[in-house]
Image (cartoon, rainbow, N blue to C red):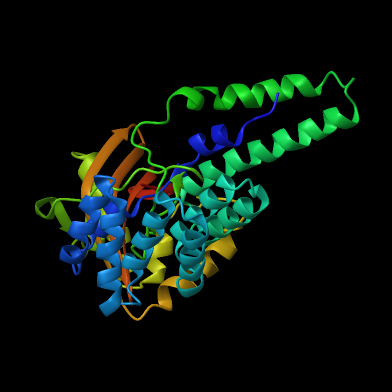
Amino acid sequence: MKLTRTAVLKAMRLITLVGACAALTSHADDYTDISQLLKANKYPEALSKVDGQLATKPADPQLRFLKGVIERNLGKQAEAIAIFTKLTEDYPELPEPYNNLAVLYAGQGQYDKARMALEMAIRTNPSYATAHENIGDVYARLASQAYNKALQLDNGNTAVPPKLALIRELFKPNLTSPRPGVTTASAAPATVPVAAPAATVAQAAAPTVPAAATTKPVAAPTPAAAAPAAVDASKSAEAAVLAWAKAWSGKDMTNYLGAYSPDFKPAGAQSRSAWEKDRTTRIVGKSSISLTLSDLKVKVKGDEATVSFRQAYKANALSVSSKKILTLHLSGNRWLITREATGN
């Protein structure tokens, strides 16, 4: 009745660095060859390329993240763990290195370490959906261990076997076929190009790169544009999102925090006041912030709108591309954010 480590790893999502590197505009050429080799599973060649680049740019976070992904795919778990651990020390605000560390720890059966790494990822970015999914898989594994221990101590306990069966059923589909688009070799952080480990502590899909032609600069809408127009709710919801992004990039905390509904609840156990304080510290503390939104898709149903897009974020030395989904509610004549989620 044991839940196998393989089942848990197949369920966990790893984040890949290939897409993150491709999304960077300043150094895209440096990573193209390495990314292509990774996609082709030519890991020794990719390692040789990345080492050559690191010889001249030893501090480059994207290259370091790529190397961690390559080492993992080559079966060098200790080396990969060392790389991602150092990235969490150098870039503690990035959730992806923590996620990849969790996947590596889970692969070794160190579920407590995996849990702690994922908790750090979520603390860093409470709306990081991948980390929430992965930590659920880790908790399931820990629950399985606890239930098995309970049976060892009391094999007559009839309440435990059904619970174990439920957990086994949860992971059963992954025993035969991994989730589409998931890899088990890498993942990239949203602010530092880094490949994150398996999409859920074992696998993750590489983020796609937004086409330059579809990129929409954030600094555009005026405050008036953020107010919903009765004739086109979709455009007004999009304008609200662009105004939110403009306030973020301009470190305008009044309008940034004002874009959130009173009903907005931060992910995890963080209180609204603690979240606002944390966001203010993170945003105001940056010397400069650049946000570019692309591939915006808006769906409006009644007084609720869902806006999905790719977000290219740059601040100081960090550069990250990730997918984001905002849910907004029409309050009076304003669209306000009620939920936000970050994914691959």
